[in-house]
Structures are given as structure tokens and as C-alpha cells.
Amino acid sequence: MLFVGGDDEIMHALDAQTGDAIWQFRAGDEISSSPAIQDGIVYFGSFDGVFHALDATTGQEIWTVDTGSAIHSSPIVADGMVLFGNYGGTFYALDARSGDEIWRIDGDAQISSSPAISAGTVVFSDTNGVVHAVSLTDGSGIWDFQAEGAIFATAAIDDGRVVIGDFSNQMYVLSLADGSVDWQLPTGGEIYSSAAISDGAVFVGSDDGNVYSFALADGAVNWFLPTGDKVQGSPVVAGEQVIVGSYNGTIYGTDRGTGEVRWSQDVGSSAAVTIDNGVVYAITIDGLVLAIGNA
Image (cartoon, rainbow, N blue to C red):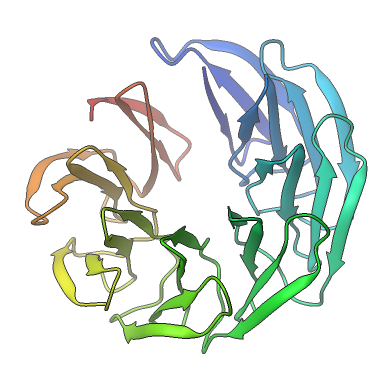
């Protein structure tokens, strides 16, 4: 199944082969949080501040938690917990089965990004430009890093490095151990896109209209693809391809090593991309869900 939420306030469960609706669940406000699915449960938040856990098969509500502030952050499930932040600046770790609070961090800056987890460390960021690293076990602080601009992107973690961009056009690669800067470089626009990492290469979009590939080790530019409009979607690596959407309404399938466009598909508007069983799905900002073809 494919699970998609939207401005219509509905979480849709669709047959991934046909696009037919299996069930729908109406939340109390729009859903911009991408769902996490684990052990037959669908987790997501909505803009009324309510976090939901639903049965993936039936759409029946299992539990809810009202956080009191809008949720844009997409959750992640790890070690029996579901983790996410809200616009009020609170970061939550809830019991994935019951919704009971295990730990929380109360901040004062909006959390729009989603958490990333590696080696028992949770990394999340806020719109004051602070990257936080905390313990997965109890939420205790490990380190903070102050970026130059607001952060909406979700960190990518690989090989002991944290990769993230900000609204001052900067890409940062930080040490997962202590938050020190391995390297930093500018793009030509704000970075809303969350990076993907594969085989020592970083892939990310920028509001300057380019999709970039950087070397994870030192930031050397492998290639860049001009699209002519903002790239706020997050690239997805599928085999030897990098797949990403642009605000020009086009989904690109590019060669991972060279950036050469292998195929493209006009979907009418900017779209997020996901891949399931080798099929590329695009979810556009106009509310369309399209199955494009094999990755």
C-alpha cells in the first residue's frame, strides 16, 4: 500500500498497483507530515497538533497524542519509539505501541525537519538554525551546532558524518561524534531539500535550480544538473539513478555517477518522490499521486 496525506486533511491508503483507495482517515487539519510505517502501524502528525497512530490495514485509530502545536516533522520509528517535533519547539519520543511519552525536549524554535538516527544518536534541527544531537535512550544532549540560516531540511547521516543544508545557501558536513565541521560550501540558493547519500556521494537540490552531487569526504563537486527552477524535493537514490523533482514540474531520473538525464517526466508541478518495489511514485503539491514507472 501507499500512504499519502495532504491539504484535504485526509490520510489516504492506496493500492500501490492500481491507485484505488483502500481506506481514508480524516484528521483535524492538513497533513504535511510524511507517514512512517512500522509493524503494521501508520504514524503521522497534522497541523492541528495531533499525532496519530493508525492500523495500516484498516485505518482504525490506535492512539493519538495532542501536542498543542502544528506538526510538519515526519516521524521516525526506532527502538520501540516514534520520534518527531512540532512548531512549538518540542521534540517528542513516544512509545510506539501506546503513545506514552518516554522523553521530550522543550525548545523555543519551530521544528519542521524530521529526525535522523545513527549509532544511538538522534539528530534534528530547528528554524533558528540549530542542529541538535541527543541520546536516543533519554534525550540527553550530546552537541549543538549553530548554522548560519534557518533549517527546514532533514539531516542525512553516513560514515560518521551529518549532512544538512540551510536557508543561508550553505551545505554543512558535521562530525556525528562532536558536531565539528568537516566541510562547508555554498550553493546559489536556499536549501530546503534533504540530502541523500550513497557510495560516498551526497545528492541535494537547491533553490538555485540545481541538483548537486558532492563528494562526502571533502565537498568536491562531482556534477550538477540545472533544472531552471527551485529544487525543494529530496533526491532518492535507486540503483544507479538519482530521482528528484523540480518546481518546473518535471521528475528527473539521472545517472548517479555523471548527472546525465536518463529520463524525465512532466507531472505538472513540484513533487516529492518515493520508490516502492522498484516503482517510482510522485506526489505533487497539487495533490496528484502518480505511478511513473520502474526505477
